[in-house]
Length: 357
Image (cartoon, rainbow, N blue to C red; front, side, top):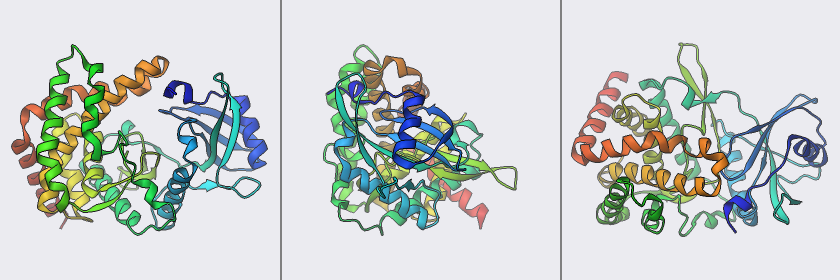
């Protein structure tokens, strides 16, 4: 089934009825929120709470045990001091409910959760200062370190073989390269895949394994103003790409998406890296992988955004947010080369850390 046919379709009235039926709450305000594959609604209730109603697409809804692990991870992070959402139980005590609906493709089943609403605005909408980048790197590392301690009977499901968004499976991009036919970017992507095969895969035995959030991006990190006229992180969203990987993966993903929000993208790496290493200093193998893994994530984002637009042309604006900005950055990063970029990142990380001492 194409993901276009798997994405649920509900209007605000139907979403409101779902909240009443499953949670015995009365919505006073409800509005749709942007989403990639699922359906999200902001919900304020007469009873006083604020929530996000999340209706999973029908394909992912078939993996209830995996969604259970993701939901548990959010709660585990929340209990350990990080601002993650938690799921509200239904009136029958379940953290998620499998609902059968006809959204225009025949009757299908969709997993439904009501998650706590976290205050703040996405980091994409505020100036990304060096201090905020440092805090972003530090928070990402803290998150991975906490998740390392998590136990769950279905934890093995995070070993998502051939999961195309995992940085373990960058060579899978080769099967999607036709969406770049005629685009000079195709040669850059091919070169990055080659570099991944020759310089990253051989380093993995010396990299540290962990559970990855997998999508610590500029739309999944919320911030609020702090007392020093800057911003503090107030929320971590969307655990749908969680997978077993390596610490260096989440660092690369964080740097890549923060680069998209900065007027001088190459400057981002140092501050994020300093924040990360304040919690988890990198070993030599991880340092050697970082540049190619950042490029690899750019390539995943660019290629899969093109694929998604073919399936959901009406959602092109949201789907192409990262891709439009990323095209110029990935070309520049590739042309600058690994030696130059690493020198900039690691030198500025060291300088940033010295200033904080």
